[in-house]
Length: 164
Length: 164
DNA sequence: TTCTCGCCCTTTTTCTTGCTCATCGCTCCA
DNA sequence: TGGAGCGATGAGCAAGAAAAAGGGCGAGAA
Image (cartoon, rainbow over all chains, first blue to last red; front, side, top):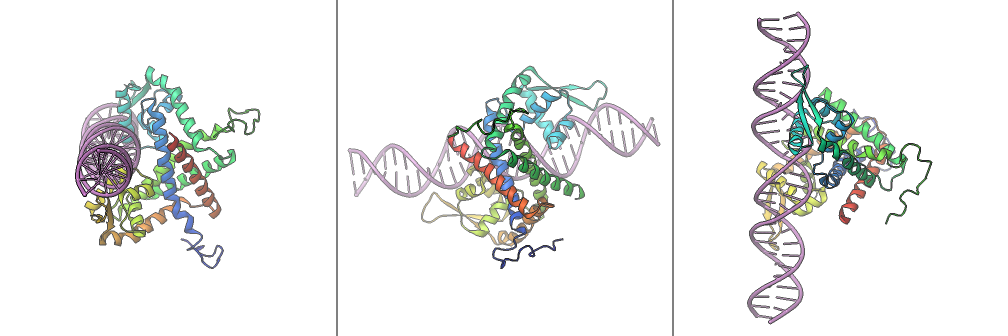
């Protein structure tokens, strides 16, 4: 790998290699931004009485009630055990409830409770408000570009994970 | 601040509000990408015997030994309690050690041990390798754009945090 | 000069998400 | 009918955050 190491511009090799220079910063910057976002969302979500990470479950269920923990995990990009525990906590909090599937005994269906359904709107507000804040000062086009690049990165990470 | 709220373009509001449309997706996508990255980095870092989140401490200390927990926390974008505990764990793992500051009794200086110093190189490899993987298929320019946009988002999030 | 109060830094505590490894139960197919 | 698989959980480890508790330093008041 890596033939195009320093051949990019060859500008006197002023600062290291211009090719990898930025890539190293990618990790830290993504991590940092995600942390900031999580913290911000967390505070906004606190008004609804829930934590960052739980919002997705509510929104997913609002779109399609009765999903299984496994489905939720996949769609939210989280591992199954994490989803199980989060669901358990949210059930205790009264936002949703588990019901056994009549046809297949292995499956558990997750349903929104009345309280859960009532929180949907407020959560949507928190999320979009948070998104708007994050995107402040960026043009529509820039946001789309950011989204596209981020998805590409995520894709890279995923495909590598499978190969091991 | 903020008078220029909806006066941006006013283009008939074709699809909802063209401004926020993508913005809502920003949060989930960033979160998701960060999770993937964390997982990937975690595996790579495991060879060095440490966890995702600890790498930054080593690298920071490699650059400037003897920083205080507070300084490390700020530079790594983490809250002080988190840093304290991480340092404690890393001290137990043998990567670094705490020393009291002679001049100011409130301060604690964190120093890399020999083992810590020896891990610096390998960690650097893990991080840059991970960054390279993430940036796979992206042009140099795209990476720079991504970096720029991400930093802008992070900035937005931070400035809002201060205002409360 | 001495004492006290306010401030800063660190650490402790408690709660959550998230991951990996391991386990238990149910299905379905050979 | 017995085993392979899939789905949901359980247990253990770590990062992060918020709230609050210790300790030391320094400045201002008496």
